[in-house]
Image 1: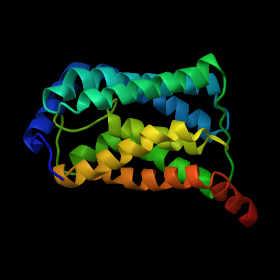
Image 2: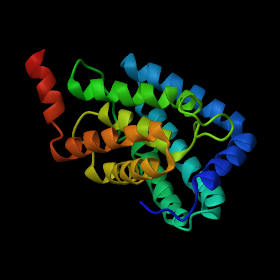
Image 3: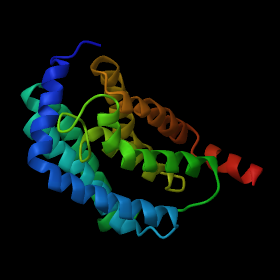
Length: 216
């Protein structure tokens, strides 16, 4: 995969981003931790969860993509627009319309959900561990952990989940995962797993839950 920027430029971008916005990243990580705890306890408030997802996607689309990433990749304007559209979708379905819900059971769907939710929370520690020390590492409040957190939340939503709501997370999982192969950002390889899980959920929305009921 050929990219319009080098690995050094990419890591320098994270250095500038983290230096300026670390307090925001920490605050959003704490809010996300609280949300994950509520989901795992089967006490998720659908409107609040939708609002949090909207904040994640709007922040990544406007601040990361439009303000920072466009400096090294013109395609970031398109990415930013898609992320803002996804934020609007979560805002409409969640706090405005109340059309999202979440459950928690012992099913393969929820096991995958837990995998992505927990992985998104430990993501900030994986960059330094994989050889990209702070501040030149992807930490939080950026597209890839946002997408992994979203994959976990969407898999915690009982079917039918609107297929169009899965489209941008699947697309970014493939884009971000492919870029990870070139840039050496190994934590982002989990995006391929997220893409496969969301594609399965889109194609056969009851399959993972049905498997869980049969084996219960």
